[in-house]
Length: 94
Image (cartoon, rainbow, N blue to C red; front, side):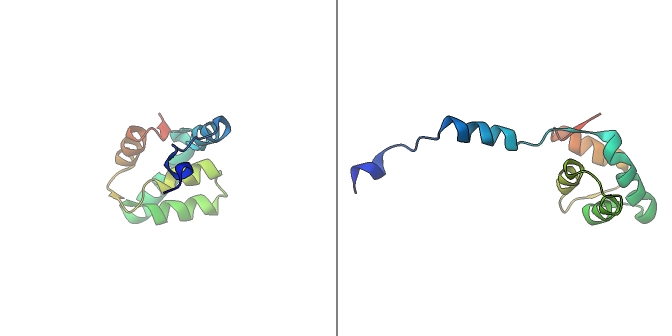
């Protein structure tokens, strides 16, 4: 194996900074709550697709959409459960 392949990979400082900036900033719960509450009122549970549909309908900010995406395939039985989950993931400020 050539010597250059055995060398440790150096990540330039600029790339390290870009990785740090890629982390999502936490959004305020007040921005998400109407969509989460709306999904709950319509369906009696909260699923990502239902919340996303409401958020898209209101042209929600990209950060809000990204945070809703964190719900994934989970099904929540109340808006409080969603808030607690997203807060534990450090994606939402209360």
